[in-house]
Length: 157
Image (tube, helix red, strand yellow):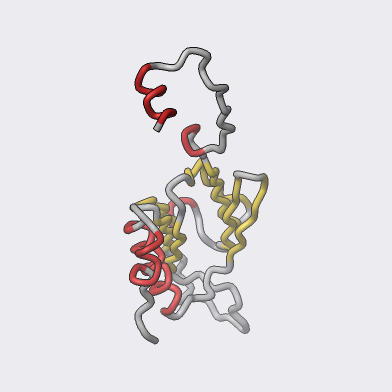
């Protein structure tokens, strides 16, 4: 697969998006690699700005799981400590193998908390939009009744 690079295409139309283009390129490169199917997961939109990541982690305890947030990448890894060497299985369908799963998060996403409930790891996220990024209405002022000398000169020209 060829390298994906948005920057040369969108450069004439954007200012200050270098980091965003770098992250999109990294995201594409990560997706181009084989995406593991284990552990299975869901991503839910709970409310307008709230999300929930659910991972099915049967057989894992809190001590077997590590969650790290680094450079807007949420990294979840697990190492099972179960020892099945002495057991005799007729069928072993519950995978308790080690795993690594990553999610790219926007700059405004905050990880609120994580719970392990009945074999489901639930990670709660919230999109916190700063006030300066929220839309606002700009009022249009009427022309001032008294114009300055400079404004009068501009009007005459």
